[in-house]
Image 1 (tube, rainbow over the protein chains, first blue to last red):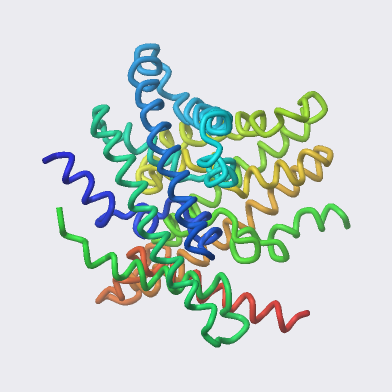
Image 2 (cartoon, rainbow over the protein chains, first blue to last red; image 1 turned 135 degrees about the horizontal axis):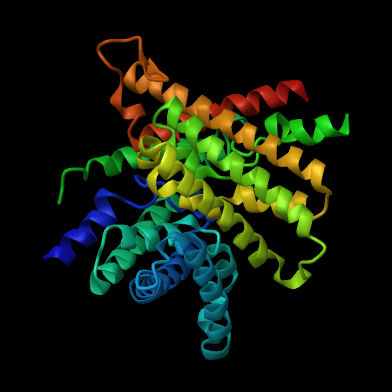
Length: 190
Length: 195
């Protein structure tokens, strides 16, 4: 039951992109084609779940016992950067198809604040291991949901005539604002 | 003259938020009031200034292949310092900004400036560049925060001028996207006229 609440709250109510403002860069940057958006979602889900698990274990069994919690930021970002590199190398060896699909997005994810943000939030909210994994997974789904809806809208926007000053990034923000308003409708659930 | 160029580039011509679209997550998230924008901007400026200085000072010693991880460690060090300082001296602001202080590490503006400028230039130009970019970022955040606070709460820097409050939507997340979107439209229009 706890876990169900975590999932619904992360996917809809406190959507990672539209209400917590994490991962805006890929949200604006790779939202031109639906296929790219799906690839990015896959890569983010992969990295987010693994890194949240690893950082959770590190925080619990290394940083807190050694009284080094103030090093959290440094350690977490290093772990995530290393992890992304490792995932890339392993994927290249193990599954060529998956590497082809996710490969170009993986390096971008190191500087995706969503991954570090969720790792820190999961620790701050004092979740246990299963809850942390559920939290990371559902946030990744929330990211994918927002990104894919947004990309679908932007694909259609290409065919709409509008003043040159609004084209591109500004209209993307205005659309994101309207989408965020739609997601506000979920507030109060859970 | 070149010193002035290094400093002013980040203020207007290559403003991180409105022209380069970097560092958007904190820009949108913390600008619910002008004061929060100011706090976040100054924290980021501090990190920018000092990581630019340190990177340009040690750039000759860092092997080219591992430079990005090295820069990230330098940046993360200053972020930790800022985080601890703010927790000690401005606990209220620290509470408000919350998660977005540690997230300065992954702010693309900071890594972007160290990689694109400080790794190629000497100490004083790098410091000026860091300061200019930081102040440009701070200005953008204050502007966005002030507009959202005016429309959403009827106050500015905490001084209330409309007693009945404002349109709450501008304080809520959608307002952030909308205000930034329309501001970029104005910036584009202004830039097109001047060129």
